[in-house]
Amino acid sequence: MAKGSAFWDDHAGDLGDSEYRHQFVLETARIQAVDALINKLDELREVEGLSKADLARAIDREPAAVRRLLTAQQVNPTVALVADVAAALGFRLTLEPLDDKARAEVTERLRALVS
Image (cartoon, rainbow, N blue to C red):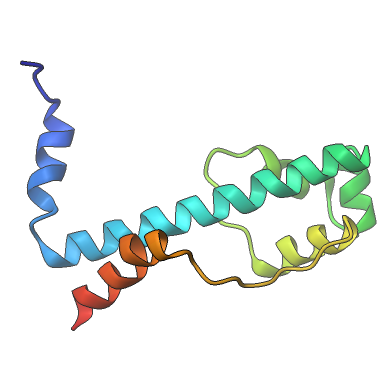
């Protein structure tokens, strides 16, 4: 039988605490959403044949801001920056409903934790 790490053992125990579990579900959903969005923007930039510096000039931002957005390990971009990048690539931000599986995994869990 494989031995678990202390971190994962602690984490499994902490999930028994409703506040910890709530924050964990929120953060997991946030990371997945931001990661998917940033990856899609970078993919679109490449399809358009734009460098990060080109994209920065198109939205009147410093090249470092776009470089950090598209390459940083920990990203918490503003909606304004993401909307500007999307517009420069010919897209706009929209919201779409989660599929049934995601609703069960995220939305219903979050709502259950506060009721």
